[in-house]
Length: 119
Image (cartoon, rainbow, N blue to C red; front, top):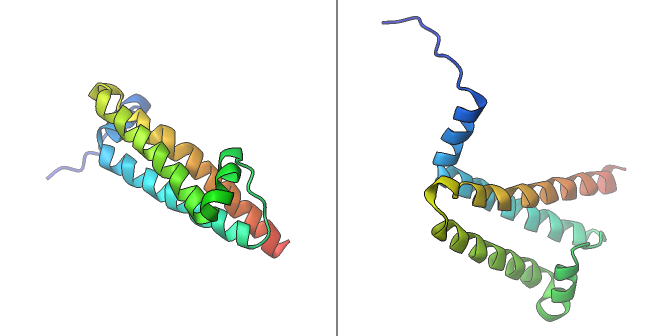
């Protein structure tokens, strides 16, 4: 038995460990996908405006749900292809690069909704 406290990882080692667990990164990406889509749809239903010009162009043809899902599925398809062709050393950057903007958009949507609802 030991009472030694494990040494904390360096930031570089912690990032390398997180990137090696790619299934976690893809799970976070999918959570960001859901957050962005649900908050966008809720905000649109409460009278907020969509600002993404690509989504705006697709809405007349596919409706809000179809436009959002279609665009995000295209992004996911490109991301998966890039993830497959990149050397394993760089693959972790792909889900991170997709999750961050979607997560930020979802959080910004949430903030707008809260301000709209609670003033």
